[in-house]
Amino acid sequence: MTLDPVAAAMTRKSMRRFPGRTTTSIAVAGSLVMATVSPVAAAPAPGGPTSRVSVSTAGAESDGESFAPAVSGDGRYVAFWSTGSSLVAGDTNTTADVFVRDLRTRTTTRVSVATDGAQADQEASEPSISGTGRYVAFSSHATNLVPGDTNDRGDIFVRDRTAATTTRVSVTGAGAEADNTSHSPAISADGRFVVFVSYATNLVSGDTNGFEDVFVHDRRSGTTRRVSVSTAGAEADERSINPAVTADGRYVVFGSFASNLEPGGAAGIFVRDLRRNRTDLVSRTDADQPAGGNLGLDAAISAQGRYVAFYTDAADVVPGDTNNVQDIFVRDLRTGSTSRAGLSGTGLQGDDNSLAPAISGDGRFVAFESYATNLVPGDTNGFEDVFVQDRWTGSLRRVSVSGSGAEGDSVSNAAALSADGSRVAFVSYATNLVPDDGNHLVDVFAAPRR
Image (cartoon, rainbow, N blue to C red; front, top):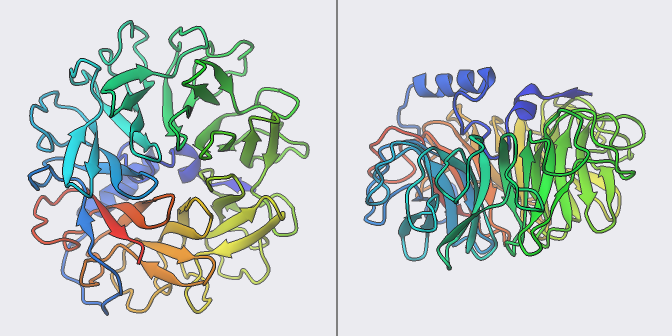
């Protein structure tokens, strides 16, 4: 198995949304910026209106680029980060902030602020939002969001939008701050648990492996545990990244280069059952063998932990995979079976890579980004698009289109899906998805699934 260097190097929340994080992402972002933007003719696609999320309450477009959407359970709220200063009044810190857009009331608020309302003195990004939209977890290098932040490292914070409080969760069980950078938060639907990645060595006792690990903080009990360990409790012998968590916080999925998390020595996608203290490799073929090929180390997990979506170009995951590109797969942890998602509505394999899946709470819907041109009729724009598949019916729809069905005139990716499957948020360089898009910057959009 070869681990995909792009997926392995970047977190799921920042992949192709965080220009400059890696050489590969710089190359991708550069090609997007230089791409010629021109109107594209396409057959209209079914669906409702697409709206731009990264706008102010008054509807003004952002004067900076916006990335990394996260969607609440019912699709009402979308969290994102932006370098723009025009989204809320008083944004004068000249750095990236985290915002929440209420799609029902059409209001935008900034959440990367201290309890007293002070704006962050350094950048904030990588939002994750709870099921009701009340809690938003994010990462920040700011030193003024909570008292006593003296570690000069990136930390994980949670904003309670109801109580208007901000707390730091990348801390030890005793409340001591981490001795190194933490990033990539994901929050459970009820807001109780936050999983994240950290280079810190002092969050738990016995952390001597010298690698990034995945941790979980229980906001109710104040405890912090390491997730990326074997069933026997051995710490990983390589780095672990890209966590996601189930609705109740019991299961955590993550990617790891480690060879000792499960017998057999395979790196890949793992699920940790925090109740039973069990770690299992879940990036498996339908024949129950470790998946090979260029395996992306960012996966998605359904609300109850039954389904895990991942991607690889391996040809042996399911029978009949002959396209030699990366495909989306879903592992059913109850039945031990693996199926391929991301096929066209008529069952055609994609003719180019599909990656970065998101999955609905019940596992029925899978959103993903793809370079394929044959998944829906009329895909002639030559750019990466965002799609949603109904795994029950097999139907597939492209959602990165305008309200009239016109395909985007530039790249769209970074799909996020609400738990109920009703709404998809994504990032796009396109200028024709909504009227009056004149900022020529990366924006965040939202569209109904159908």
